[in-house]
Length: 425
Length: 169
Image (cartoon, rainbow over all chains, first blue to last red; front, side, top):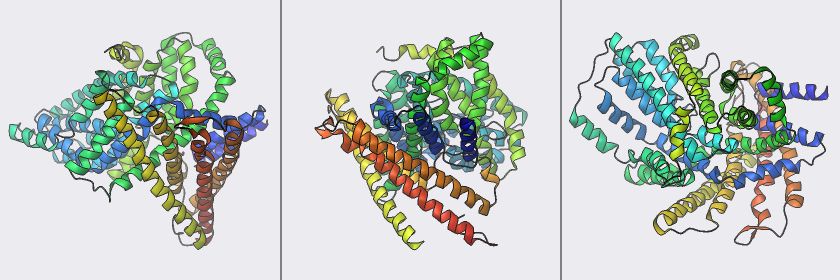
């Protein structure tokens, strides 16, 4: 009875907008005291964060992403992609897909893509006579595209809480992410042809000019993906290399940011996000250890396995569950749900890396799922369109992504094939 | 009200400076490790451990700033549709709740420091472990103070804004 009252009270507080770390902290404190364990146990678990080798990747990649977002790099990459692919049918839409995906991978997928790049891309799409509904849907979707590509923050976070090798997870997301991009590109080509969008002729001169402008940013994906895949870097080393490289390039070579005026501000702003994540992660460590100690995952499996026998059916149900969770709050969903789900999924014989990709793709879709996905609100604000028309615009994209999710769920090899090479060099 | 603002500004100034300094040291240390490893096949033995301890420090200071800027993860699907004044009341309640939780976390951290850590154990370079762990009670304490300050401000604004919209809403 008491548990019920306390539980509903905390739920009410959460819905009233109380910080989730405080909710999780309160549950952890109450759980430990109820079982007669000193609450210091929660802090012991929190402090175990110090033992995670990948911990440092969180602040370093976040910082690198914020520096890039503040610089003119997104614009330079957009121009280059435009020069390379602009001549194709649906070219500009494809350019939008690839440049937003890359931007999101580096900026941590917190919805900044729509705010930062939307103002650049959306008007160009409309000007080139892409249908308004298509353009709106595309921009809303693009806000979370690239989440599967390293070094996106959700991947790092998943690897931390699920205790999965981060290097492998970085590599695992690439193929599913590319499949997603190709499918959306085909849809863009189709739209481009049907809407008779005029094409811009290809010009070598344009390619050369934009290539020269972006020459310092082009190595970035190579450092991250190539470095890890080739066994030169671990993910944490790639984080340090990327942060230093981005800082040097944008401050001293491109001079988009001023060292004394901008850099301290960018450090502070990026560490606000890091602080929010780490506090949440810290208190959740305590709660998770409590749940594991009480064998909650095992009990959960006992109940679920009573009704669900097949691995695939389990994954489909899991997908629906995660989708609803993610619509509400993404980072918290990873931190809270993953530690409980992973042991259950292991019992079903699901590979934790495969599960990670499923989870992250769900995140990507959750961002744009009506009625509550964050991207829908951002898009409605940014492009000054009523929410309902954003809902309608996003639907075809939503179903496309959903179909990819099903394929990724059913064929684990798509996520796992490249991970077998990691660490063999 | 004025005194509260002074406290807030002083604390924020300290945290602002600390976060930039600690982050810089952390980045320098991590980058130096990579350079030493890649080019000279060597490294600082305690470098990685030290960098990870600094992440915790940066995290708590970042948590303080996140509190100040209302950037902690929260569910806003319902409060998003509230009127400014009603939102102030909701904020005051959730800030009070968060400050209370932080208070208990501070107490738990103090127990952790005094009982949970061997006073003779060292993390690296003979620095006692508790020196680094100090950030846990200090961090939760800073966040608690910030939540309390915000609660008072929301309350004052909510009471003040009779017919007109309150400032800072």
